[in-house]
Image 1 (cartoon, rainbow, N blue to C red):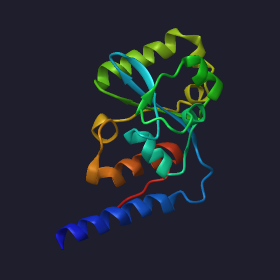
Image 2 (cartoon, one colour):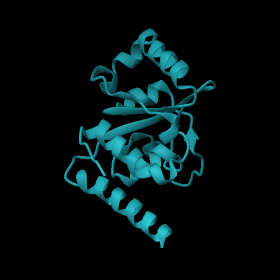
Image 3 (cartoon, rainbow, N blue to C red):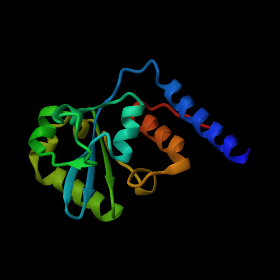
Image 4 (cartoon, one colour):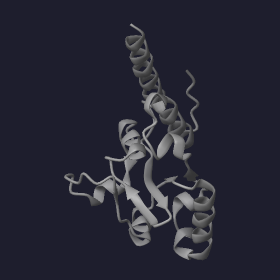
Length: 158
């Protein structure tokens, strides 16, 4: 009975997040994963990008995939990112402080970053690894609510 109650609350909270944005124009986003080895883009197989998809947002990265990849991340060049020019860039990462600093430095050093709408509009969002790098499990509704807050400015509370 306890498990059924937890599942019902979980499903209800996810639906509450989805209902909050049902009339929103889907945000065009890219989900980048930054690690010490470099930056890749998340496919719908990865944690954050799968939440983005479930929320009906448009992941610009998927337009470059053939639909059969099972990889969670794929190489994604700055040139392709510039061509896709998403409204929002979500960044998931390992060592948060170190990677945030490195990403901000890269955006300052390379003028190509300055041409991106997301950068110009201060819409590069660094997401905490505890909710977005690994599966957040029962905290998925909270993680999805955070994405909605960042993308649309809508607060969803449970």
